[in-house]
Length: 254
Image 1 (cartoon, rainbow, N blue to C red):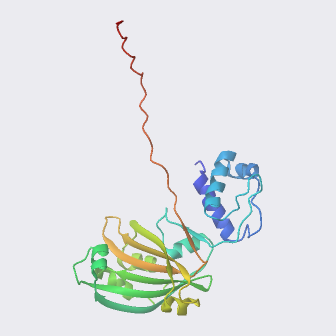
Image 2 (image 1 turned 180 degrees about the vertical axis):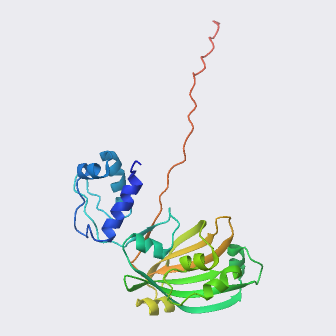
Image 3 (image 1 turned 90 degrees about the vertical axis):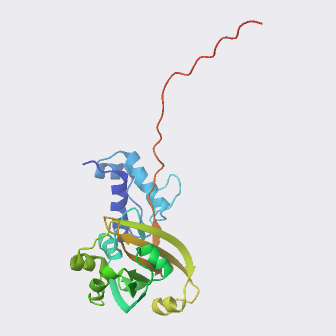
């Protein structure tokens, strides 16, 4: 199997997160990495450029790529839970459910979860940690058909995603995401130890099963400087029509 630049970039991300390459250190030369991964220098360079775009490496031309002190990054090209992302990057995720309550769905929740107007949904307020540090407040809403399975999980369940899969066989199939900046409210300020109004990364999403049935929507708010979000994309392929240009017809003399 040929190692491509995205796989190399993912491997380097894990090594940076695990402090194999700590802030201030340099990545090996491109020739050394090319030999290690069995690829061309051009493939390695593509991986390095991706990490530079994420702010993990410096961008000085002609210099060894230096690792910067920066927030860890989640790549939305892959649909995975916070706990799964943390485990893959050698980090330790934690979670504590602070509040559970059932209410009728709002108009926004009705549209997101495709439930009947006023149908009961389960609200979960949860505090997440990374390597023991509180970094994230989650406001999660579950559709009624999975609510009992979620409510039955222990309050300190590390991954509600995995717990729901085990208890009810419900797994992620598709996600729709929105990212924006927002000021911290009183609740986030208190739970995360920051000032009210501090800028936070807000990540809202709706997750559906593989057959397209929405079951959870969430409003996640990260402590400043603790997380960044990346997205891989590409330009659409263009079809090229090849052929001969038509010859101009001769103009008869006047």
